[in-house]
Image (cartoon, rainbow, N blue to C red; front, side, top):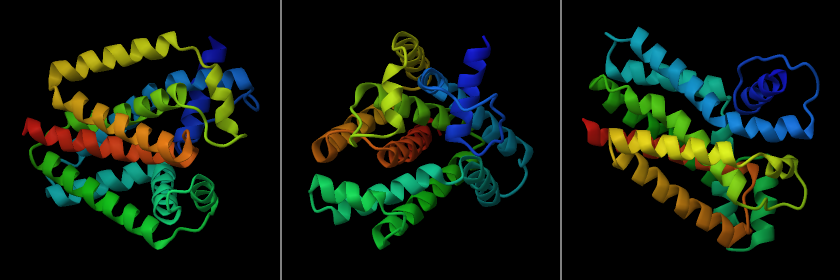
Length: 243
């Protein structure tokens, strides 16, 4: 039981800025098992965002959306936005070449394409939040972080790592059965609420994974972060169909 708790804390530490204290440096088994708890981390993030949205009811929808987006960025530390920016720079500057794309993505500096991608992502997310909060529709806000981290979990378990060495290599040891059970339950829940909430993220996941395999023959931490950001927006966008 303690091992699973440490794995959850490891996932929380890796995916968020929420302060946690681990009993020690996590070993390979703990890190691999942490992958199982990505959806739970997403659920926690969604609950915190919905709580803020509920507490800020009565404020103009634009102000609500700004507060929720600020908390969203604070909780994740902009980690996935950074991945989106690096991926955008790599895809534009890589000119279709795998090694050049990986080299650009490894550069810590953000280029013009990456800055533009981040700006448009934040603008799109804010606009969708404003539209949903104006109708007091919180269900998609709860689901977006959950589905985003489920998508990252599925990507890491079904796709090779693009670089020869990296921390993601150890994640291949994670047990598969609980992951597919999570996927089945989540799909059932989303289909029951509204088909578009699962179809749009699934199609986007399939297309993004296909692009990663075609360009990089796998994924990187940056492309996994970009996947989370784009899937979150897809869920929020699909949520508009509930209005």
